[in-house]
Length: 477
Ligand SMILES: O=P(O)(O)OC[C@H]1O[C@](O)(CO)[C@@H](O)[C@@H]1O
Image 1: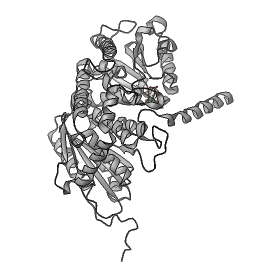
Image 2 (image 1 turned 30 degrees about the vertical axis):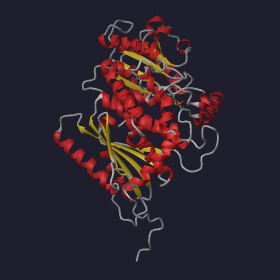
Image 3 (image 1 turned 45 degrees about the vertical axis):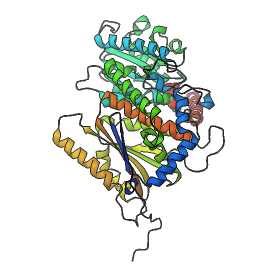
Image 4 (image 1 turned 90 degrees about the vertical axis):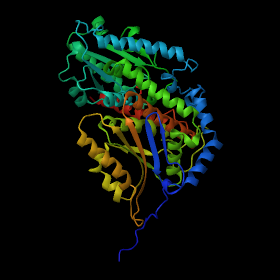
C-alpha cells in the first residue's frame, strides 16, 4: 500500500462554497474569485484588516500626490498621466506634454514628419529596457492591426542577435529611433543607441539630418545633450512616475505613432475609468483591493509564493512580462518603508504564458507537481479575429482549465487558487482598465505588506558589478 504522501494537503475551502458574492464587474472586466482558497468569513476579516490599516486612505494619498515613495522622496503619480480631472496633480504639465507627443505622433503618421531625404516613416525602433520597453511592447502587441502601416521594433538588451534581426531589411531613411530611458543612465539603452547611431551614420544620416530620425524620452533634462539631439526632440517623463508605471505618458510615443492618438486616448480613458472606480469603491467591492487582499492571504496564510498569469488570447501574450516586472520589481522586498524587517512572505514570483500553449507545457506541473500556485486565468469573450471554431475551442479550454486547475485528490501535495478575469471585448479602453487594475492591486499590496512598492534598490548592486566586469574585460582586450 502506498505510504501517505509526505506533503498531502487536505482540501481547502473555496470562496464559492460559502454564500456571498464571489465575482465583481467594472470597466468591461469580470473578475471571479470563486476558485480562490478562503471562506467568505476569511474574506470579511481581510476586508476589516484592510480598512483598519487605512488601505483606501493610503490609495487616495497616492493619487493626490503625497510623497509615498519615501526612500526616493517622491510622489507616485502614474494616475495623473491618464487623469481627465483638471484638479489632479500636474494636470497642465501632463496635458502640455501629451499634446506635444500627440502632435508629433500624428505628424509622423500623416507623413508630415519625414526622414532627412523626405521619405515617410515606416518603422520605429524603440530603444529602452524594463519599464521603458515592456509596457509599450505589451500595448503594441495587444492593439496592433493587420496590416500595421508603421511597425515598432523593440530593442532592449545588449544583444547583437536581437539588434541584427531588427535592423535586417530596415531602411534607415524610413526609420525613426526613440531612445527611452527615465534615468538616461541605463547601460543597455545607451550602448544600443550608439550602435544604432553607427547604422544611421553608415547610411550618411548624421548631424542635422539625424535630427529627423532620433528622438528621446526621459526624466533626465540633459538627455538631449547626451544624445546630441535638439531639445525639441526630447519628450519628458518625470521622477514622480515609476518606470514600470510609465506606459501612459511619453514612453508610449511608439504606440501613439503606430496605433494613432485616438487609440491611445481610449487606452488612457479606460485606465482613468478604472482609476475612478478603484478610488471610490469600498474595499469589499473593489476589484483591485480584493485582488491585493487575496494575494496577501495566499502569500502570508497559504504560503503560495507563485503567481501564474495565463491569458487565453495572443493579444495579451506580452502583458504577462509587463505584469511580471510591475509585480516583482514592486514587491520583491523584505523591509518595510520604515526599515523594519518583514517576517514571512511578501511579493510572489510572477510567471506565465499563453494559456492554451501552457496547457501543453507546464500544466502537468500545475496539476500534479508539488507546488502551490495562485493563477489569474484571463480570457476575452469577443475574439480579436473571425475564426469562430478557434474561438469556441479557446473559450472552452479557458473555462474548463479554470476548473481542472483546482480539482484534485486531497492526498496530493499541490494546490492552486484560481481567479478568472473575463474581458467582454479587448479594446484599447479595456486594455487600459486591465493594466490600471493590476497597477492598483500592486500598490495596494505594498500597503498591506507595509513596504515601498515604488523603488528598486536591489537592482543597483548587479549593475555595479556589471560595470566593473565590463571595465576588466575592456582592460584585458
Ligand atoms: O528607464 P530607465 O531609467 O532606462 O530604466 C529602465 C529600467 O531599469 C530599472 O531601473 C531596473 O534596472 C527599472 O526599474 C526600469 O524600468
